[in-house]
Length: 430
Image: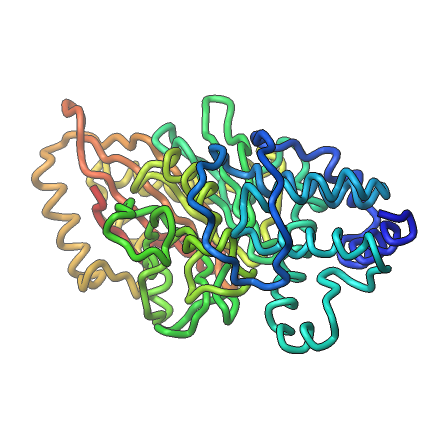
């Protein structure tokens, strides 16, 4: 490739990615590398790729295809066009369904004979016919690079994760503004970011409110099951992890719909456009497979936000103090059978599977009578905060009576009303 053509490719990428591309990708290490096999042939400037040939392919690891693509961008940014072309050829050979890689490979080939004007520099006729597809691929490239350029500071976590118990071995956070999913491991030293992946959300964006609106919900959710890929259509790829939309807060707000999953892509697509699903969160199959192998059903929280705020873990302890006092008041009143104090902590519009606040107060009185003075212990307490027009806490804990080893697992939803925290939903989940 001539240096002038390579420079023009760099310029096209720089318009999309900004000048910090080289520095950001230097800090980004691949999850794994794949050995190069025989070079592929040609490049496809279109989103629909031919099915992969039957020849055996290298084992695919989560994140490796994206890491290789970013390395190609980096080489192009350094005007090392020949090396970029070789790596692009190998990438599309290993992943013939990776349409964005095909697009970049086609540009690198074209740059050998003529200057490039933009990413996906095809003829005017082809560009007009495939305008929508080219726009999607350019947006996908932009979102991948935006997330890698705007990395969270080391040691920081999303502000929603106030306290996770040892039962929450992993946690997931989705940042829709960066088309990114972050996977965390929870240990005795706290949350640690282990991987992050490009994702697609609803074709109409976020903030789901009604069934069929093609939007992805925002809030605090939990993985509810792991669907066997054999029971699913190819459209869902390597599998699916449903989440509990609509949750209690969604129902309180009158939101409808369901069937929101984390799922994969069909065989002919490595990834989808940033806004492409009917409301689900969609990942490349290798990335989804890593998550499926890692997380546990029912105990893995999934935060989906328009934009994540990353904070130092110690900074959120003071922020959660007022809520901890309210939770402790509830615990002490429940353990002591203090029904007056206990009832005051439930909101007037409390609802639990059709039970009103009065119904619930009667149930609390019945439970106190059956305990006969036995105290209540809370085990494995976790609470996550969701803040939009209101301030909400999602609390999960095991409730164990003194002298017992096990008890029900409860989930409560608290909402701040003025300076007070009140429970508007409570139910047994296990």
